[in-house]
Image 1 (cartoon, rainbow, N blue to C red):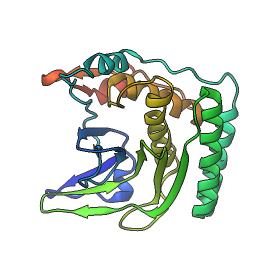
Image 2: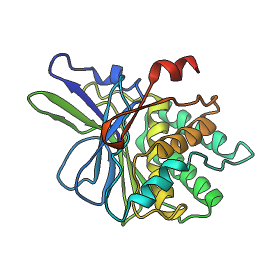
Image 3: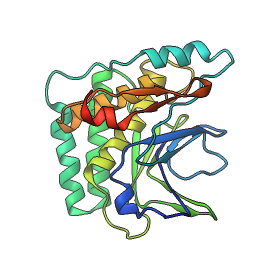
Image 4: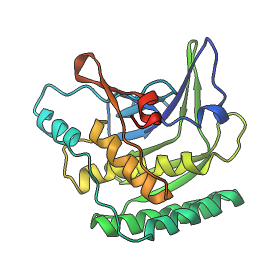
Length: 240
């Protein structure tokens, strides 16, 4: 799940905020892995901003070993051909036409091909219109997408919350890859949960850049208290 959060000191326009790909995920109770708005039944929500991308804190229960394995798993096998790249381009073409049904069909084709490659059960997808927006006194949250564990359903929102404009292709593809990587955590890696570890972000980035045909940059991380990590955007953008 990916969320845009803008503080009351200066709310970020949805069209501007969608440029950033730095989600900060926080745990909440339930069975939906989501990218966006904070509501009681969601398991995860993310705060997306330009300054930080934070991992989850390591659990202290029996799930700790699985969490650490996810953190160590930085590599995701990728197709040796352009099957995902060609389908991803059809998503871009459908978005240019602005028709939700066409975008959904293209995304469903991407998920079917990716699921076939990884030999996992296929997941379904719904593409909805404007992102849900929740405004509170000191912050605003915006939902980009989510993944429901029991139904294996991915939901994506393709229009900005305020201006109702079609989001950028990169933002939607990134959200699709992110939610599909939650699916892979359960059905490929067989983790007990899908945590936002350094490994998870690395795997998501690998799939996204492969599908988009763009070079992947090494992610540089900075340790924080409580076993969490934050991405160092300056080093990552410089590549050193």
